[in-house]
Length: 126
Image (cartoon, rainbow, N blue to C red):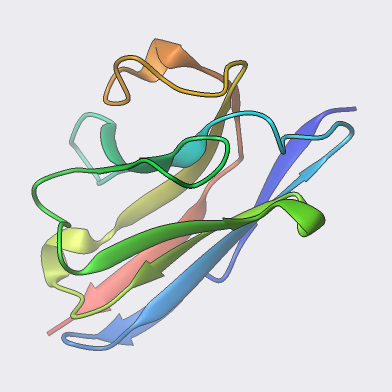
């Protein structure tokens, strides 16, 4: 069974950091683009960040640029999201995603991604 399993979510204070991990199981994702979306309560799901298959190209939502970093370890079939200077508006369920392509043409579009994780909660309190 192919799965993306997120971990690392939790509750933090404003300005603190958190790193999310997502491990792919059931198949190799080393040749595919991977990334993260999030959904806050009462809001639509939104793109956060993505990286192409070899990490040469990354994409970020304007709201997280300069604070979040997406990276991957192909030997571990894992993608990470390092989050710094967290704000209350970063509170959301974060979903790991993987495409069936080395690069995504429109990374902000959810339909680009064939696989989705179950999500992990991140709560930022002031």
